[in-house]
Length: 465
Image 1 (cartoon, rainbow, N blue to C red):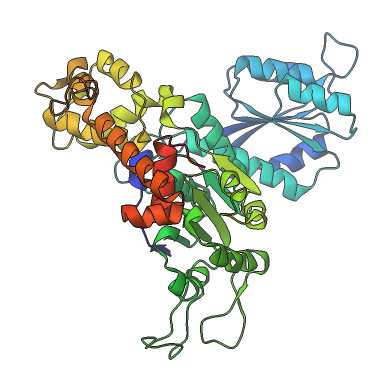
Image 2 (image 1 turned 180 degrees about the vertical axis):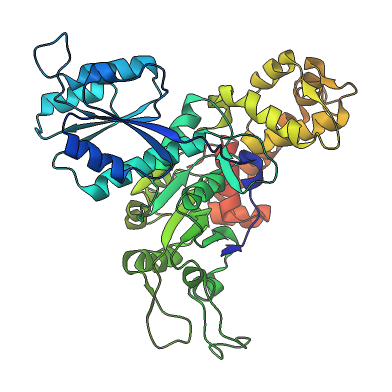
């Protein structure tokens, strides 16, 4: 079940794909045959398991997606057991292998040596089956986020991009598989926060995903929208209503633009997060909803706490798992794949290709609107480019188009129209802030929501006291 309350960037950042049927290769290096067999039985069905008792028997021709390595192995050229040497060799062969070190001796020096060698985790023996299974499922989830093929009609969603930042984001998403604590996603507008929320929720199976834009929930209707109401609770309540929290039971409640919630609403939300209990408007009994909260903000919430715009206790609850999405200007390695993906989306109607020099021009732009802006530019390029090959001049003319309406003295005529509009918008907002010295009054003056004004202040780099 999915309740969609707002339309977001979700379709802009994700591939629709069909996963390959090729299994993931899992290496288990363990000289205890009984334990090795038990570990093999714990592995999810998506793994093809290779059991090895001696390091020298590790097959050279196999690409291993994950490995469980005992730290007390005897390497032929060493008299002392040395599992970290095995880890180093695996990492040297394939730096992307997800390696888990195992040991019954919790020696700090050994643990640090294993991590330094390249292991991502260290498990203590005797091993807990639940912990091993959870770790292997997270490794599987990470590789599922990496492996995809272009297929338009699939139901699988994946991030587009090969940058280091995007790969770290995949790892963070995978680490949250089957975790039930709250999650906070922060990032500039247009970076794809709801995409990340959907990927986190989707890897746990078909569970409810309820998406709410907090800036659209009025103060008077907050309790009715979030917790529901019973028939006759107030004028116009002609039927019983299920709130967001109840609709998300057993799944995920995504709260976009959570920075827009007033303090009194934040307090009510905090109580629900802490207990899972709520009472419908007009209802007499408490109800319970087992729901994971995934919140997103365009503004770092810590900056709002100091100004008493956001509750510190709510922030600590939400930020148990904090994900920060880097802006596109810091992920230039993603621009090539994203641009080609957006161009490919138009191929059923228009067959266009990007020239390599055109990609270089795209990479030279700062992308203040992030991936959302890149998608819009790609759509315009497909529409306006006269040749089947989109040239660098086509991109340059669109992004850095001179603004003929501004005088040379007033504005740099080599800048784009978007740059000109952003500059004028920034001046207009700065003037209103100077007049009122108050965010709420400035928002009223500008006839926009307070959360929208906060976003514009951040996006345009406006300084205010």
